[in-house]
Length: 218
Image (cartoon, rainbow, N blue to C red; front, side):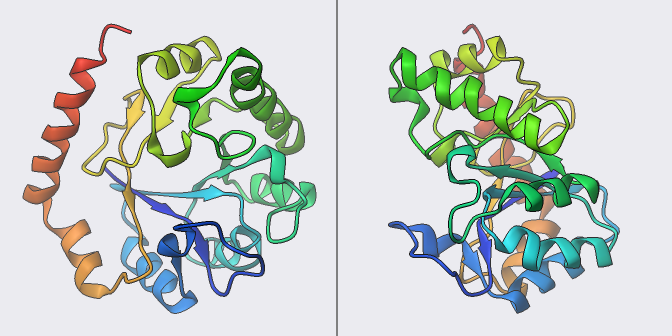
C-alpha cells in the first residue's frame, strides 16, 4: 500500500518552524487528495504534529468521505496555540481515527540521552493513550529519523508500527512503514503520479527494503 504523510491544512494559526511550511497544504489541495483516495484500500493517510487543523479541517472532510487516518500528535504541545487540545484528541478517537506518537518535543530520537528518551518514547505515548482512551502502539519518529538504537527502544516500548518518510510502498503487516510526504505544491499531476504509477513506487520500495535489511539485526 501507499501511505501519505500530511502536516497541516489551511492557514496556520501559529508561527511555523523552519521547513514546516513545506508540508502545509491548502484546503483545496487537501480535498483533491481525499477525493482521489476515497474508496481505495491501498492508500493510507497519516497526520504529524497534532496541528489544530487535524480536528477543525481534516476530520470533518475525512468523515464526509468515510475515510480513516492515523494521527501522530506531539504530546508536549497538546493544548498549545495551533495544536489539538485534549478534547480534540478525544474527538479524533471517537470518530474512529487512530492515535500514535510523534514524541514530546519534535526531537531527533537518534540523539536522545536516557532521560529524554524516556520522555519521548515512554511518557509521550502514555499521555496520548490516557487522553485518547486507547493504547498507543504506533510511532512516527520526527524527521523520519531512526537507527538501530531507536528501533530497539521502540520495540521495547511495545511498538507494532513505525512510520518513516522514505517513500515507496509499505507492507500492511510490516513494523517499518515508509510514507510519502504531501508537500505544499501538490497538484493533480503529482497525485496521479504517486497513486497511479505502481512501477515507480515499487522501485522506490525496493530501495527502502535494501536500507531496512541493513538494520535487520538490531
